[in-house]
Image 1: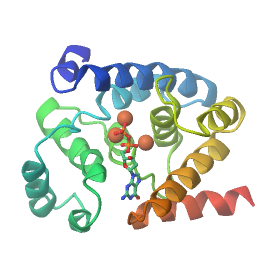
Image 2 (image 1 turned 135 degrees about the vertical axis):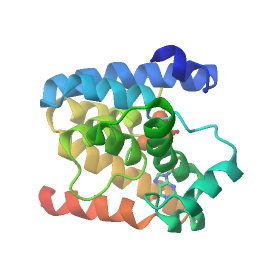
Image 3 (image 1 turned 60 degrees about the vertical axis):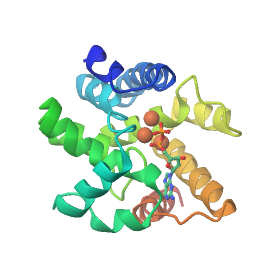
Length: 183
Ligand code: DGI
Ligand code: FE
Ligand code: FE
Ligand code: FE
């Protein structure tokens, strides 16, 4: 599995993937998600990160299971949805729970499973991440999975809004979903 992802990633992105893998195992153990599924999703989560833009656009426009409206949003979102598709069809990983964890690792979604939360959060807090506030989320991740995911979504949305970026509706819906549970 590792050799296969290493081939399609930069050295830096591969190191990030190792960090996400280690963090996802730890979180899965702590919160009772399936450890093997968390490992598979973590290892392949950024598999499509460096696909050429025109190739990703074409898949978004033609593949029914990838939402078409993604073309109107930041390209940074594309690799998650395209990733779930190519991991299924090129790598041959068929587990729908694992594929969903890859698909929603960037935006989240309402009603995330524990596995999806683990992978989303591991991507945000792995040891190589150094943005402001990440240590707060790391500490919270030790004790409350939902609260930590909520914090990560909140910070991501705030960061995008400060930069004048469009927030994908699914990201906002994921945030609102956990907000209700936090109140
Ligand atoms: O692939 P990674 O760099 O490891 O991390 P990622 O897949 O979580 O996020 C990639 C980028 O996507 C990150 O810079 C934040 C951005 N992003 C996340 N949610 C949204 C978003 N960008 C837009 N425009 N809208 C979103 O809802
Ligand atoms: Fe990613
Ligand atoms: Fe992320
Ligand atoms: Fe990542």
